[in-house]
Length: 253
Image (cartoon, rainbow, N blue to C red; front, side, top):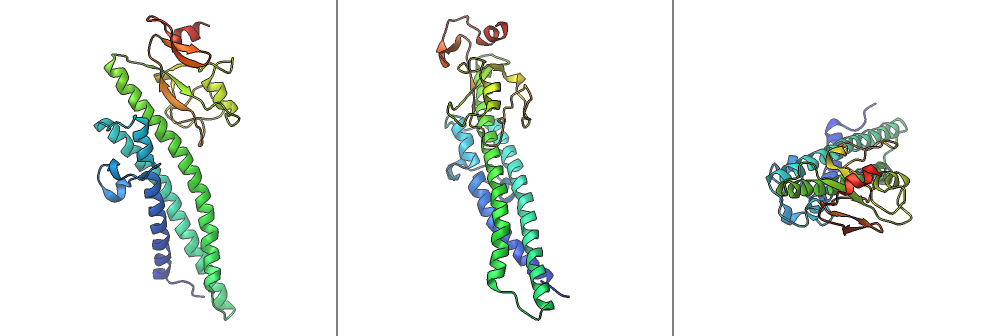
């Protein structure tokens, strides 16, 4: 029994792809694989990954290394969206094809309402997956942006392995994993690390090594640099003395 023609399936998938490309641009601020050029930061949508990366740099114009880092992030993020886009397009085309075949077997016709329901169901699933992608990639982009800025500042100061910590949002939503990794046992003082101690991959619950990409998809903790001479008083960054080393102090304790 014949269903939707190959050209019909292709038309459905093209329509779905266009919707996804619009969503991808809104999230990424640039689609390098489609545009084939460096990110144009001035036109990036607000709260896009490109915009968030620039915010993490303190609004400064990125250098060539930082631009390359951002392009890598955008390409990786677009890969996740591309995979979801292709899967969703195929699912919708196959579901509509099944509807048409069933209708023909019953000598009936597929209504626009049935097609709309199929599209709506699959797009709702896709939106849920896309939300997870957006949360995870936003966290990663923000912290990688902070990290590249920290590395640049450290190089200027002649520091090979800067001391870093995570700024946590101290409210009822702060998870136990972030408390464990980002704060000392007093629950007030941020825990410091050398930048080289951070993982560059996704964190797995229970690991003792924090990730520069964030501990989970909607992690709100932000990576920050702690200069020599500075430490913490009452949980807040404070100048202690010129020779103070907060990292050594915490490790000795």
